[in-house]
Length: 543
RNA sequence: GCGCCCGUAGCUCAACUGGAUAGAGCAACUGCCUUCUAAGCAGUAGGUUACAGGUUCGAGCCCUGUCGGGCGUACCA
Image 1 (tube, rainbow, N blue to C red):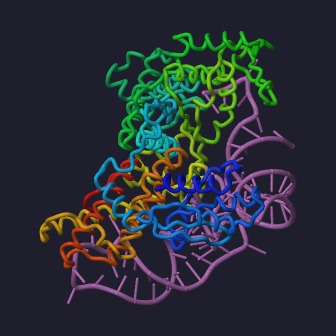
Image 2: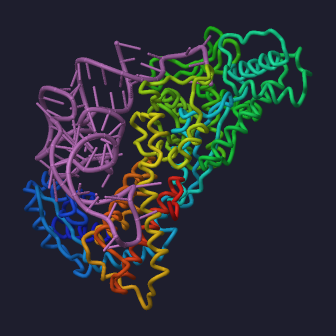
């Protein structure tokens, strides 16, 4: 319908004003239902170049418009010069029928068909369990990946980690100290160690497996390696509970072993963009508008994290992805321009790297902001949260707000809210429909074709129109990387259904009407189920 | 100091990236269950979109400045 209108409008404009450079015709759904189904503002945008009042242009345009009366019921000029289009009811029924035929594929698009996408997210180093602080990253990344899949892309999910840095050494030592303590040695945990109880658990498993074999070798790699293994197991179990399955875990160390790091250094050097000073190797970021140059290799010979970051992105693009998407919090925003600059220098198309930056989550506990620290072990893990509220509520909570705004996560409220949490509003709509279906199946019999035009009630019309918007919102959420748009939409659909539930009945109605209504509800259930699937949230048949 | 993000109802947040009368959920108040799930529906109340200018047919959204908050600004990750 959208394309059809665009087409006839452009055509009319061409006939009216042959000399004019055609503007892009924008159609949008008016916020207010009385304003029709779709509206365009072309008349207003043309007011200036044509030096005519917008309403006059709109009138000329409407008069020359060639349209099929079977598709459009009415065209009006309103306000400062909007042209409002009203669809013929027939169009609505045909479209609904089409949606019903698609069933669980309804809403799938082909916008990114044939494209290979990679989404890199979570990427927490294995120093401790995932906390609610990681939750937003994990859920956003996975859901954006699902959205890309839904619009046709082939998507890989990747977890990038580093097990070689200072923090990991501290981790290994923390385990070693706990190990010694458990075996009766008087050793103090050094300042800055990991204090969490899980460290003691890891030490305990080491004792079970090896007794006191390593009591005099606190520097033995087994401490770090065991910790890493146990913690990674824990992390992937947590992700699994949240319906997140990674395709690959990429170790930063591979970039050193496969030569990517050296390769990047060499190629940057060939472009004359690096130099040595004070024993360190610098990247001339000033030539890209930054105030200072950036250190790539410290005077100690150790690279800064920026160098592997660059190499990692180059490596990802070399692996053949059309687009690589990073999900990260506002604190990492600074690295992004450097990586992009470097990739540009290395000859990559910078548009192949895309970033979703989300604002921080403020944890509120006992009514006060709560600063978490993995090291100091004052944190709430995602597992603990899911024990309380389940994974549906957890996912929903992180998705319901725009990534660009700060998210306040009140632990107490999330735990309390349980049943009255907004996610239940959506699930309830689905369960309620399924319940009706079960009842109807037992008591009513339908034969013959469904007669959709029997759906005439105001709330039925509204519902039908809402259902037909689903594909639009999937695309919108995917392309903007803003899953909350889909949530807002599903909320509207659920509200429309709940209203329908009160306005219209099925059991006790005349059979043909009941049959048509069941068809409509099938559509609603489909949209709710498909939408919740995209969000990684269960659509229960009963609650 | 400089850079990025944010500031919308008492609270938490929307507003499809410049459209028509700024909307939901909590919290408050009022109604609606002998009929398909009241985890619901209908209604009342709540706003100078932080402030001051500017751009244009039109601004919560764009530009400038001010105030307030967050994050950066490391030879830390």
